[in-house]
Image (cartoon, rainbow, N blue to C red):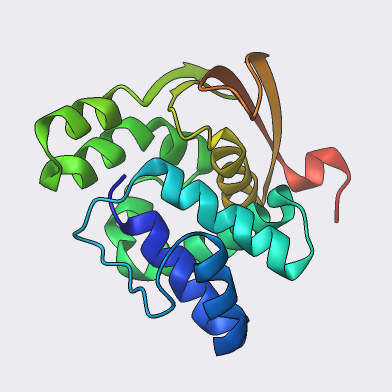
Length: 189
């Protein structure tokens, strides 16, 4: 995994928890207490999962809540760091359709076998009211993908209704449908 996710999670920790809590999370996840996460460094998928599990354990929440909070923070960071990705796709559906291309472009710095894994991670199929995402990843972070889609939709005045056609959030292979509706059409204020 390219360092973008661990790097962002660490930035989240530095802003949201005390230095002592961050240190405890890093140690629980199997890292050194002074660990720094670089964008240009590859990290094992299991390390990212261990980091999120440690956040949930130390802060007393479940992993889904940890992912929801990290997703919101990640979108803030990504919109500031990579505004071009967001500018070319003004609505959620088009942005989600770009996910395979965004991930492939970000993976250019990885070793060729890791580039291939990233290229195979997402396959997006357009639906009239959303997308069908074929998600394949041994790190089993489908919940994080769903949380990012929900948060992005909310930021863009939409509601994302997510269902698993195949697999689940714990599967290494799943097919996820993201149906999008304007907030006012759903009665949500």
